[in-house]
Image (cartoon, rainbow, N blue to C red; front, side):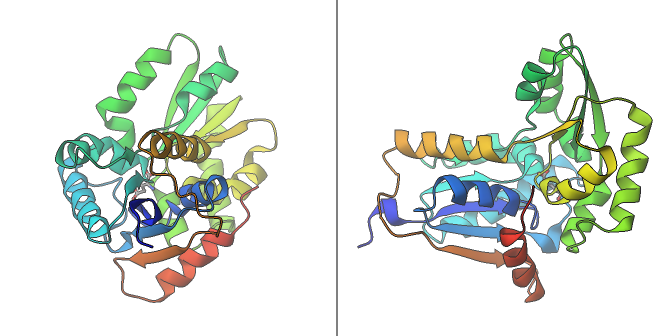
Length: 259
Ligand code: DGL
């Protein structure tokens, strides 16, 4: 029966990184159906001008809406910074969940320490993050760490290679002792095993995926849109890059253990 509640949740990212969020959504809400759209043909978003990312995000949202989604998860910190306001304005009835670097939980757990906030250049320069950092700047030393090459590595399916570890060492070694590392880009949870090899077990690695899943649950419950089916939901992958290897990579990332 086609009730609104059976319709899929649309999830998108600039590429395959948002699959780290999709996995958390599926873990918490396995009865939901999901359509994941990776815009890999246009990745990375993080090095583009804000207006361009807003345009690309609106175009992907329209594509997902044409597939009858009941809610949208912007599984991309960069697209959230650039476009969530505009998407909400344009589609006021659509429940929308966005991603933002998990600075608040990091500072709450590790006040008066050094915390690295890894994200794309766009996320780090946008007003949304500036305000977040200003709110917590007296409580911890928050260090902005742009890491654009990591997006490219994950897009190629390179998650824990010597190149990835060398790049991470170059970024993080000069920062000294860190209590925690906030993964403010949805591509980054896929490099968690490499990151742990580089920094050891001491700094806690914090990502926003589980929080986004809880937020989706709240938003769907509030709108009476939770799927009450007893059957597991379906996950469908689309990608703007027509190469079938993108779908193979998407499925592989969906299954990759992150811890
Ligand atoms: N995955 C994206 C994010 O969460 C952006 C990666 C990119 O395309 O630069 O910020």
